[in-house]
Amino acid sequence: MHDQTPPAFVDLHCHGALGYAFDDADLHGVSAAVAHHRAHGSDRVVLSLVTAPLPVLTARLAELARIVPQVPGAAGVHLEGPFLSEERRGAHDPRALIAPSPDAVDELLTAGGGILKQVTIAP
Image 1: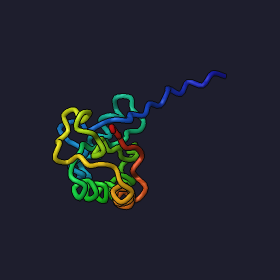
Image 2: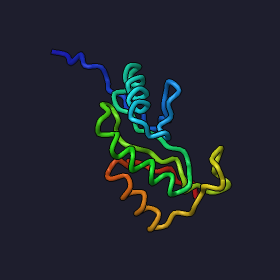
Image 3: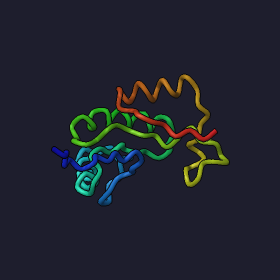
Image 4: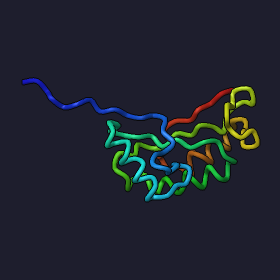
């Protein structure tokens, strides 16, 4: 017997959908955006956040740690920064860039409560 189960795709870098950005850390917006991606072929979605000052990122992670378990298909969070060099920052706000440090990493991991899955680093 041949398995007819379609492949399950995981979107590893997604900032939102339908006018909702995951940076807003809003249950309704996160739910709607993830449901939209799931309806179009992604079984799981990793929520990407753009570079922001460390206190803003930790607040967003703390709120998403509360939200993510409630959203079917939400696979965790990806931080696109803040550990980006000026030369490799792309469109990210240079005022929010910081060098990686054990303290900053600990702060982000603690705020995320287990939902932080990947971090983009560009030294």
